[in-house]
Structures are given as C-alpha cells and as structure tokens.
Image (cartoon, rainbow, N blue to C red; front, side, top):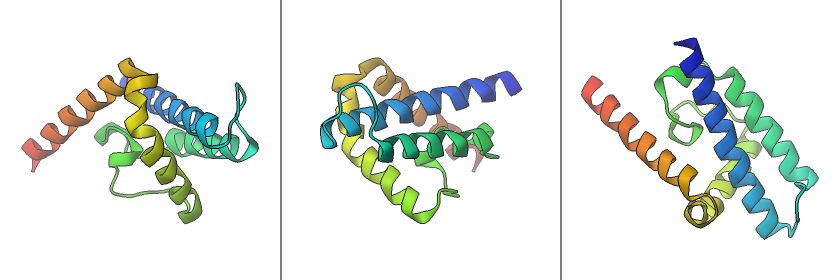
Length: 114
C-alpha cells in the first residue's frame, strides 16, 4: 500500500508541476525555467504533497476537503489550476485524461462508501 501512496504522490506532484510550468510560460512569458514566484509555488506544493496525511483517501489536492495550504499559497495554486486546467488537454493530453479518469473513479468510490 505504501508504494501505491508514493506513486500517487508522484503523479500529483507531476501534474501540479506541469500546470505551474504551463501557467508560468503563458502568464510570465518564461521559456524553460520557472520564474522565482512559480518555483516557490512548485516547491511549496511538492512539500505539501509529501506531507499529506490524506493521500490514501483522496485523488488530488484540488479534491481535498482539508486544504492544508497557507491562504496566500492556496490562492496562487487556485489561480494556476483555473488557468492551466482547461489548457492541459492541449499541452499534456495523457496526463489530463488520466487525471479526469482517476478523479471520476475516486468520486464513485467515495459515493459508495457514504
């Protein structure tokens, strides 16, 4: 089970990383490297994912009911997700579709458990 949770953490970090990179390229006009603000957000999101005690029962942070981000970082990550979410299908289609499928499956499991 621990291996499965670690794989879940890695998928979440990969997805968030891709979303932040997309956001940074489009909003801050960067090429390959993230700007300092986006790098800080990426590192913060990665740390939160590593320490998440709910990883076993949730799909991704965006679906979590606890929201352990500091308020200012929560606003930044929400802005990134609002911008990048719809664009992911064009930039990272496999990741976007996998996320949609996993999110639907998790919601079904939660509904059955209720």
